[in-house]
Length: 309
Image 1 (spheres, one colour):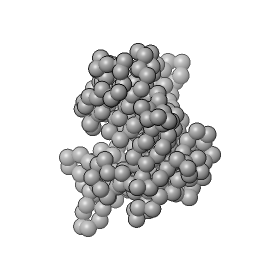
Image 2 (spheres, rainbow, N blue to C red):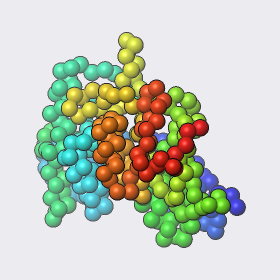
Image 3 (tube, rainbow, N blue to C red):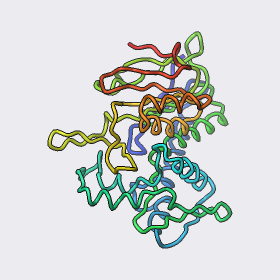
């Protein structure tokens, strides 16, 4: 039995959805329709969305949003306030550097310092009763780019389970969420971890796992080179510059894709030593760290599940 597979484009990336019979193409299209629905609500790459209505009213007024959007923003804000490396308020800094987008540049120190005042998650006011979000300073912006894909993948999985999908793969541009048993004899899945210096889909190693989320934060796809210096798109909220360490990527294995997104960002920011210790303390979350010289370090729960190729 083979998988039914379709490719789409959304969320700024190639999307690949697969299901096994008795599921059908209709289940794939229903998944894609859900992606479009959430992209319309959550994107910051268009002038209008529920998130952009909050950003447009920064320093002006609180904006009420639907329950699902409010819940996602609240989760992102509370994680950001732990100051571990994930920051939902990072938007103004991302738009200043534009790495991965047209007009990418290295801004002046003065411009970067000015933006640091606008990326403080403590300056986001949440009202649970009214479900409103208020950005207290003009120029502040929230950006759910670091969490939305994971959230959407989890929502597709729930939709598919309701529709009776037994086996499937949700691949949102490197965020992979597995549904049900695989078609191998042992029912487990084999998922590759990208080799950062090779073309996409060339793996450095393989994770042997039950149906989990496998999500990666890496610096190998979006870079800016100026005067021989390389800058990547993962920023340090304290300095306003790309995070400096010896990591190329962090891959998280978790039950929910949203947790993978959060912890891959935190793991990358914290580096191997601190990041590994933090992740070891999280039940049900494992990690593969890949360094710039292609060494791999895994958390204890993966020692017999990850093999280098």
